[in-house]
Length: 378
Image 1 (cartoon, helix red, strand yellow):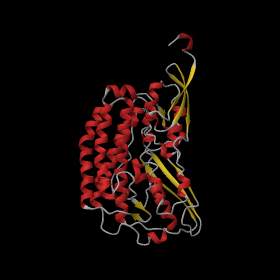
Image 2 (image 1 turned 90 degrees about the horizontal axis):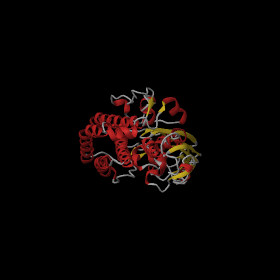
Image 3 (image 1 turned 120 degrees about the vertical axis):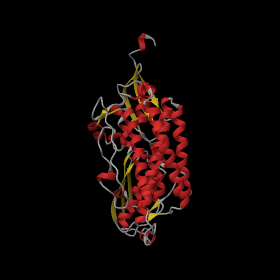
Image 4 (image 1 turned 90 degrees about the vertical axis):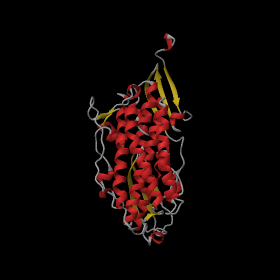
């Protein structure tokens, strides 16, 4: 680099065309190899999901929600379904509660497998990309057997679920878990003990819990700071079945910087998330009771809703995912829907998190937060 331009600031657009930008556009101001300013820009992935919800009936709305993040479709659709159940005052059968919970945790595992592979590609660790993507196919096979679809599952419905477990779908889910539990320790050893991975992630994107909470982070990104903040424990949902199993909120502690987390910690935390989800599924599968899978009055009650407001939320793969729903009397569609996805906060935290880092580390920091554009460009 010529000496006369070393200290000149340059503006570089990272995305939306860059494969690691996930459809987002982030304007970086750099001096030499270092980023001095980060300006995240929303709107390049916008699909007007909130407005679309206002033109769909209460049976169709969940389909819009799951398409915001098909990697965690079983989780993504739930806040909408929960809000409708609150306004319609629907009861959820015990069998549906347990099956919902099982499939939501399977969806969490699948989503983390996808992220982990994608993160490996962004760091240039290609084996780390292919191996979990092969394993996630086993979960997708189980999803297809149960719902007929591998991604847009359309499983939960107001008052219960649409599809019942059968012997084959249970066996396929157990096979996916068997493979996961056999290979996960090998993957953990391969990645977390890798000198290359440590060099790329240790002390990169470091922030503390107070900063994370101020920025609105949740999920693995805040639990990696040692904060056991999880809706599944903090505010148990009566329409789910987490109280039927024994589990603890996984957290990660940075030995060098207690109360803080870096990109390495966020990877380590997501391994713990996968193990916790697998344990929950293993405990719930033998407890699935007999009985109906949906409230018999659900279709009639959810056809026209009374006037009301409701707030549905779930501990998603990437953090707390919520939806506010407002209805008019005898309405067939919502009057207003407002989505709060976890990735809006994680994306805009880059404004504070990135300056001072090298340009090469931007992809590491960006990817370690597990962002997904549909959750805020909605």
